Length: 281
Length: 323
Image 1: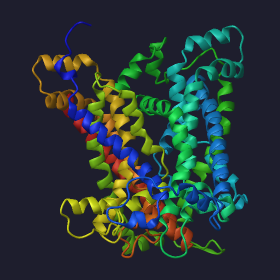
Image 2: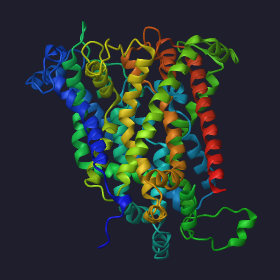
Image 3: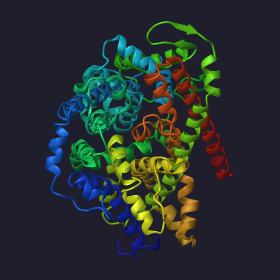
Image 4: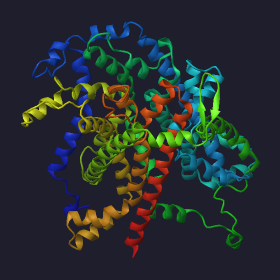
């Protein structure tokens, strides 16, 4: 390791400048949400506008929570319930089915996989009207159940888990266990699940984030403000007359803050999740 | 392609190669496990996937042949929905808007993402992990929050972006809602901001799969940085570019929340009515289920056509590359 740095490996200051710019651009909108939410509308509308946070954030936050007909707090709770239910269900169903697709030999296995992968190409709007009719017939319109049930399984999750189990679990390990007399469910629970714990967590995170940020489906099936998720509630933060930027941005900030806090703890894992998926996909 | 081949190559060779000639599939899993559990394990997934995933898709094709009134009474009309759709100027407007926004958000983003990935590929870069992580922050933000922030930033009278543009001598304030091209740029910016980091990581992952030795030997042979990129990096990215393009196309055809939040009807002259917003409004505002289902089928056709074109272009490029 005493060799000099090869020329192609040296980093030019331009690289750091570009990375600093992109870092700034990635962060700025969040900062700006807070700036607008903590200033008066007059401060923001003057030229040049105030670029530093003001002292009104708590007032605005209170206004968001108490905004008429919005129920921000129950929206927060609803979003948590939906996100966690969907994440848990997707991990569970995907792990079980992914394991079978990766390691078990059964009739029709290959055609099922091809079929599942094939449907991943279909845009999700294609079935949205019949899905709405179906959820309506099941009396799940305007309920959290109507958000959770259609999202319990995804083709993507199963395919992803299949790849993970295929890559992370050597066949020899399972063979040895089966020779020792362990049954297939036993092998799944005590060998496969512990090994794929980390990847399951990443899949769950992606499912949680997708559920948290979903807008099209909730806006289709939810009707009463008490059942709204955060994204739908945010769109209701409009005063009757004129524009209240502080109110809207305060809501946007409060709806995003939980994800930012979560991101501090899991950001690196999400990064490796995205990059692993890229190499394998 | 090489990644795929490597993966297949790394699998164990079949123990009974003669079976291959009988066209039996090579099963990569564990033979000693009782396969009969397999169906039981995939049953919950398949069952729910059929009910909530596949059945609606098939039923969608069915109702597209009907004049379907959700309040009751539907009438078989054959291909009438499709012929009406092809004569509907809003449909063509939505196609124009969707493709314009798609192009504006896909291509600049892809160039920037590849460029950023090249920077991040450098193994001597400091704070690598920090930059990678920060890049993903926009991706976890909800579309609605993004639309609220960017709507304000792009504001005609008090928006910062117009403020900055006037510093650069743009005399009049641009209306990023009323103008056709400006509104497309505004929406494309929101999409680019959200997805550029994600795509950079995807490109970075496939660049990291290129061994350092390739760059070293290229450098020894006197290749410039650009030549290294052009002849070492770029050929390895073909699959990833195809992947990003196809995913971007599917995503681009689903653009909904941004235009809907700017104006629910797609703007005063429908300047940013996208295909999915058009579908949503026909189905859930106008209650024209059959008509809206036909829109969904046209969207699917477009995705399939673009995927096929993409596939053939990539195949041609990779064939040229190997000869």
